[in-house]
Length: 70
Image (tube, rainbow, N blue to C red; front, top):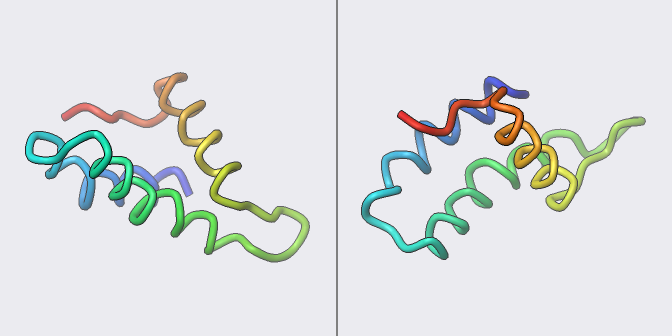
């Protein structure tokens, strides 16, 4: 899941950082990073929603497990 998150960020969000507003970046982040993760794990013991995924991604970024800068 970490590698998918990083790849989706690099593919869909990172190329737009210089050209989009922070609101537009938030939309891209939700569309291409948060929602796909939340939708991928919706059943079983470990269910995710957008709020949980957002918290996990922000924690991972803060801990430097995901490199957000080129």
